[in-house]
Length: 461
View 1 (cartoon, rainbow, N blue to C red):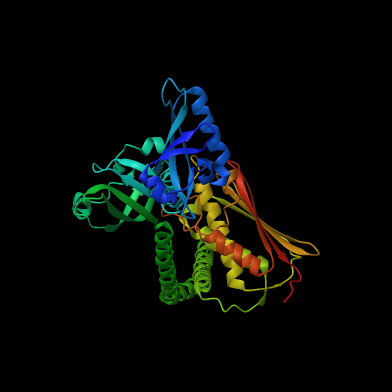
View 2 (spheres, helix red, strand yellow):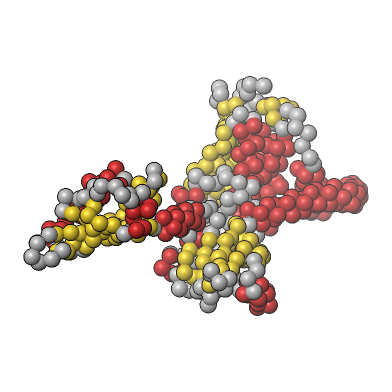
């Protein structure tokens, strides 16, 4: 639509398109700005007057009323003199319909906001496989900055564990205009692995030709972790079954050896021989007790509360922990108050808590860069009128301050891949809470860690 507009804003002339669309054929000249959307009217007039005063073209985007509807237009103002003799000033106004452009722009903005704020990592590459766009989630997941990724090939964070044939099949699929889906393992900037299900879709231009590739990742880390936990749980179930079998198979020979030792003791008066036989007998008793404790510990819980001797549970947990080869150079100091009463608990569950904490303490010590002869784990148990307080202190490597808030979260672990499930402390916390107690942690890096369990003396049943 084209108009010639006078200084005061009235329409002097217009083309056929403007007449038809504004329905002005045969009517008296109108004020042009009456057709501009009300909220933009004053600003449009200001641009118009500025072009007149400066004698320079100007532009303004707004909406015009066309047959009771508003359409998006871009107005171009070009002032000029009609002729030098009359000195009559007019402004040529060109109104270009940009409704389709605005719609496309809106769609692009919507797509950008959806892509940019998606929880799934998204990347767009050109035909050569170089990244031209990554969203915030992709940056967070990979650990790289946007500047480090744009213009680079996705190989920059590849783990190298997928074969070249795997990637060849992907390129063959997407190059032919089809969508490809597969599971991949990538590496973050810090070299830690992250697993995703990757969907790569070709981007087609208006002629149907591939102009780039759109990739979206779905994080599989939790799925992989759950799979590992399931395998670990099944393995522990198998160990429990094996422990029962071992107890039966080993128990009978041990009983025979114990009987033979007793016969030998009665058959000799030699003090030296009797001393050594007593030592053998005590070790046989210790082996038998360890096997019994392992079997009891691996049995399913019956979830029934019984009055439980806390001190005995602690002693048994310490004995189970000391069996491990990692614990052979660690001193266990156990200080238990004889005044602690019996508490209504599920015995094997509270023992599981003690064992979990003790095993973590052993790992924290053995993972230190250098061990001393004074490595120790101190276990104390005391009571007052309200609570039984049990503390486990180790001389291990300690926990970073930023990790203390996450220590009881499921699947969180500071141990290396494959050395920790991230469930032990989470399960322990849940067990203690189910007994209306509390589990706290105090730690200093390179100084050691203390876990404190508080169990109520009179829990509400």
